[in-house]
Image (cartoon, rainbow, N blue to C red; front, side, top):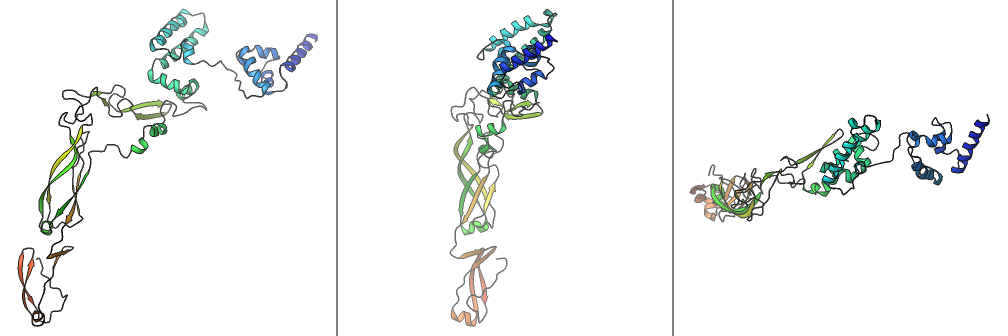
Length: 382
């Protein structure tokens, strides 16, 4: 009884000395966590981990009122660089050397009597798997240890489906894709020109030879963009696909390969004439056959007669806007041709015959007696 009373007094004294409020959440969590004494709680490594860390961090935060979180399996955080014992700026060879040294030292076969050796060996392997990979290491440095672990496990409240180094919204704005998505190369340049025709050319049809300025395949490199005799190499990073695929938990995300810009190929040198653009500005001749009956302001489309496609797949189209000059004799209204005929007073009153011009030549038209001004006579199929 005396010893039990002494322990109770010692516990109350220690709690009062260390904690302004002996009924604080920290004190309650320790004394109600299965420990019969405050000292036992302090010495329970599974409860608070490291006693020095608890006294410096948890106890100070409890006294000062700062927010804190203590878990039953809390450990001092250690990143992958710390696991391997290297600096964050360590080279790949330094990381590899540190890994092999620790792997040899902690291998379970050489530490059969040490149950912690296997656990440490697995931590070393995990750290090396990340830091030896250039892309994973870059993601790890950008996200930090906790965020990288959450993204890799794909679980927990800190899981971020875009934390694997790919953010579709960030990449979209950074690369300008939000503005270029509708302006990406979908073939060669479309060319628009205007052609003026006489009235008879429009009615009867004609052939025209047009000269336009547009993109042409480079004569020097043949449209390849590289010096003659060389070929573009397949991009090693995306293996020619032009896309980088990353897996974040249940999500499979794709982004444009930053090495080749999505082309799937890279070149070591460019054509000196076109500077790698594969096309150059120049004159192009196009033969145009105009069907009879074309009217002013009509547009004729000539597929694949526009600018050359840098990729060599889809040349642009040529759009020809028709302009018809007015004729001093004929006037067109839809599909009909109108001609004004002048009659003398005698011809209008008494009738007679007159010559009327048509598209195929003059014809004789009979004028009836009593013809009034503005009266129309139809000559069918003329």
